[in-house]
Image 1: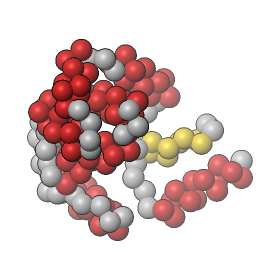
Image 2: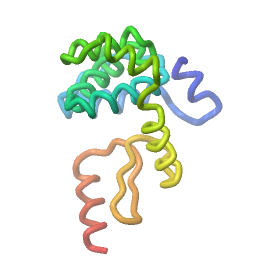
Image 3: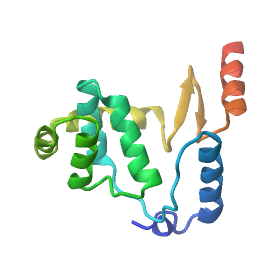
Length: 152
């Protein structure tokens, strides 16, 4: 789906949003490509649960992040996910079985249900007690949020 279609009817300046994301990514030393599409990440999330269960969660999430945000790859396609799994040392054959059998579907369903219960509408969302902060923010904003919550 094109980002323009995703945000259609909303007052979102996609070019400005992407410029801001590029600035933040650059400040954090992250690669960010010129993405114009978004892809369904459901299967990537399910495979992520499997990678976590196999001690490769952090590597997997970094690989998916780079594939999606830097390279613009479709993380909703099974061949892409199998390639990413193989690239971090996981069996692509086992990954394919995990995806075909939807072995981690219920785990991701529980994560989504919890997010809905908590009122999460965007990522990232940070929670401390009953306080929340939505969106990617620079370090000083996060620090202020933590300090505010600690003072309460």
